[in-house]
Length: 406
Ligand SMILES: Cc1ncc(COP(=O)(O)O)c(C=O)c1O
Image (cartoon, rainbow, N blue to C red; front, side, top):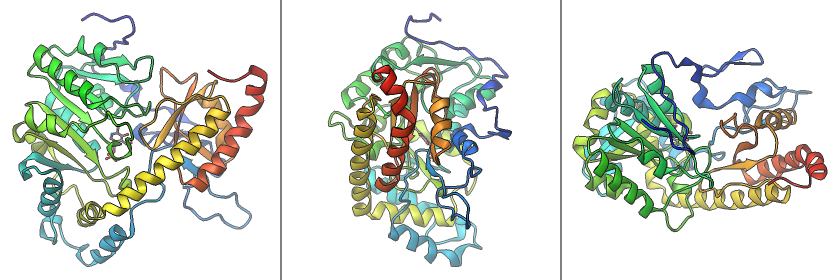
């Protein structure tokens, strides 16, 4: 397999364990997907944003490192969870409503049949099971760099080959480059919009990519991860769900962890043709969605007003934060998510430490941009007002000397 000039190709055999984080300030970061490195740098010891400060203690840190929704779920969801406390002693299959009701609700939302939907304990269960189901030592994973790393890490731990391609000059997933490696691949992972670069591809571009992959390698499965779907404001964007439903070997992953504000509840799902997603159902952990997760997700899907308000809130905070960063000379990529990928003109680790010292926790390193870019998740407007004041303090001296950052 050839390496394109702009592509970064890495083939990992068994034991590519270096992908998992090393110690930071004495704390082993076992679950790198949590992207919580900066918590270890906060002098308050990584106390959560919501934790109350003890008398004479530092105020709680503002956590902008895991792309969570800072407002959490709406009242309808919280009421549904509380109303289900009486069922806590039941297995999910004995509780009412059960998982079947959630699958029916999701199917109705997308106007599909229930066998077009598979649930997961977060969309990470879907991603992990996709790697298990569709890759093997001779059928590689094709993915981007940087992108959401769950699939990459699972494949490496299993000893399945991974072929990665750097994002393009506009920080978008380089679909053209990926096409050079799809022949014989087990799985192609496309994160749209992409975490951590925040960029999105339009519907036509994705449709064209899928068609070309199908022509080159019809047996290859394509996973389109739309975790940030609800936050996209690019009019050219379209969900890939219609493609997934009409095309063999294509499916979409969604999550309740972002716009629905339910990262702690662990619910995601896949939509695709019944034959394509059947292996994901077979690999599921039994009863992986709790009785609370089921009612919470059903309530969330019923509360359209809350979702609309969250989308509007995020768009406003995104514009405010982007302007504040660009006023400091930090160019951001075109974000269609609940985070920004900003050129802070120095090592991300340096920026992260300086911000953490003032209680602002931003994202970890994202090679190959660890020397210049920081990923900043969007908090509430009040949190971002505080955060941008810290960014000003941290960035201004260098910018004044250097005349701005490109
Ligand atoms: C692109 C992407 N996919 C999936 C996930 C995982 O989400 P979940 O909480 O549903 O497992 C994340 C989380 O940050 C993400 O950024």
